Image 1: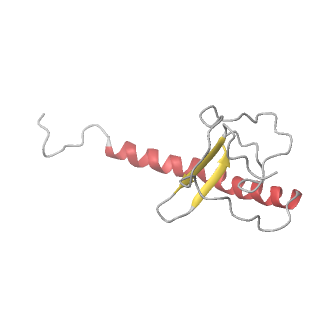
Image 2: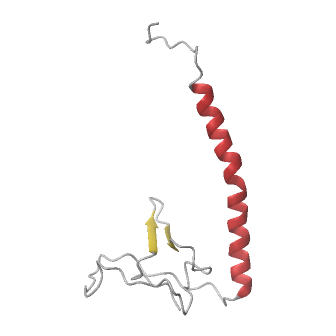
Image 3: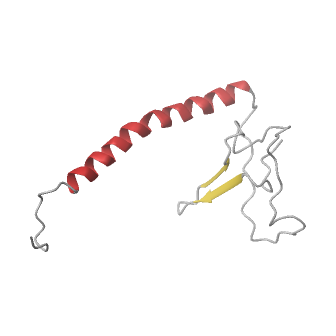
Amino acid sequence: MPMREECKHFQSRSYATGEVVRFCELDLAPEAPWRCPDDCASYERRLADVGWVHGSLVEPAIEDEPGPGGPDVVTLLEEAEDIVDAVVPETLADVQRDESKASRPGRRWPWRRR
């Protein structure tokens, strides 16, 4: 089943580069941005969209699926997610280290009087 854009849990982000990211905020669509599970138990229609008719300013349609789906696609997307998740702790530690260096006590700022 294609991504259900009318679902309460569907999210879309557009960036200045023109790239559009579509995903399930509950991470229940393993083949996002192309498909939702056929029998998703968490599907809920957005309350703001119920009974509305969308005009031409609605976000662009989801691009065509790049090929046959299935377990290979899910495995590939999970591996990519694992790679990104593996980098997060190291990056967070780097940011925290930089922040702690900048806020060390005893460091004198020219505009601060003691």
